[in-house]
Length: 270
Image (cartoon, rainbow, N blue to C red; front, side, top):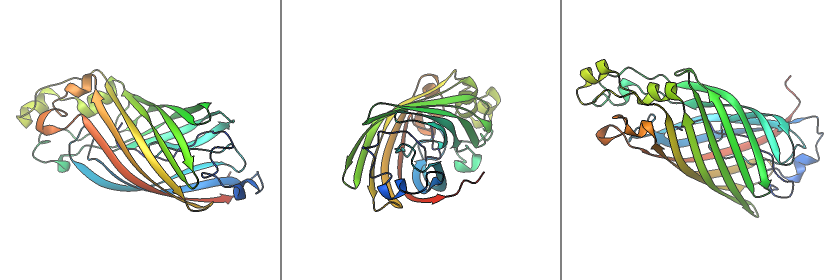
């Protein structure tokens, strides 16, 4: 998908993620919560399908019980809150943000097109570790405000720690239904007539395939920093949109980013 909020949760075997949650937290009262606040900076496509890029910054947060199974979070996870944790399986609620497409983003190419407002996508996620070094994750979400379609993502991450360093790499698959695709990649006949350089188009779906790699360095039990690079290629029906082809956009969607995590413990908020 496009640029989204990213700070998720996931279960993991206890011996793998010493870097992610040092033993000092495990010794604290397990009735407390462990909160990780993240500052994210990204360079991402200006809007879904755009060939122009823009920097964005945003905060995100993840919450779990102290003493719960250790977690790995990928930079492209949705904001997540776990409702069930075990050594290999986690499930909970998640949410993502989809940037809108506005006339002011590209006055020459987007003339005549209606604005596609930004969207919030609340939903559910599940994670499973078939082996301790491999995380799989699935999300299903529904858009509000900007679009009202169903979207989702599937991914896997190979995770390898080296002392204070951790490397992760894995494939990504994102999908959206016709409602999502029409909102961000469709062109109505009257829009094409006003624009003059577009043809009418009605996509049936939205699909991307790609990968994401990340490198994390953990300073101590509170601070960690991650750099990452992601790539998604728009395929399927939306790839044929005139908003993706030629001078209007690109099927190749890259993301470059960095995030800084700060973790602390607190009493439950409710």
